Length: 211
Image (cartoon, rainbow, N blue to C red; front, side, top):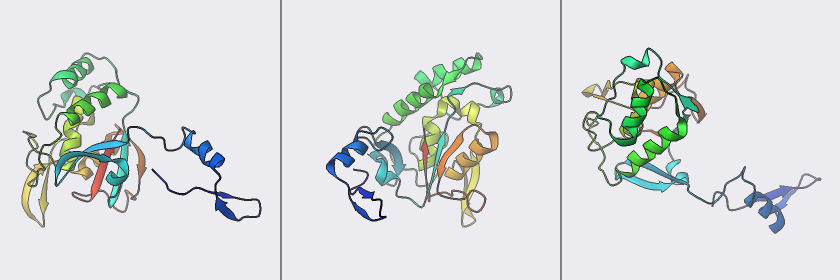
């Protein structure tokens, strides 16, 4: 359940518990929460696993980025190389893009979902160093791996990050994905609970939901 109580306001301004008929109006309204697939695949310290979206959303900062309905390569995009070897649906999408064809968001998301399902049970990349092999995954490494079919479009490269000025290594952080998306206008920001001017998502305190 997304909510346990529903109240109605009366003409006099007072609130009371909704009747069963009023509750049914919301239960059957597709504009509100509906029962169905509400699960997220992501990576945390326990590794890659599935949990409900309400548990997933319990984080310090949350940004929801969305792909456009249709995607195609620009001349500048063609110089970008995927950061991981492409196979299957991801390779087919990349080849179509290179031929100048347009692909849909649904095709890209379906390929990302298949990549995610195939990695359930993989470990967490505690050292943030698996940006080339992708045998284990941090939260943002996992998102970027799953959307490998459009690496040329997003154009994100691994950036060098350090902890307390030490242990510098090239990796991908939530902030990197956020910055690449808004800098090139490749993805739209559907929702966020942080002002990007004052504070951007950082490593380890953000969840990325790409749709």
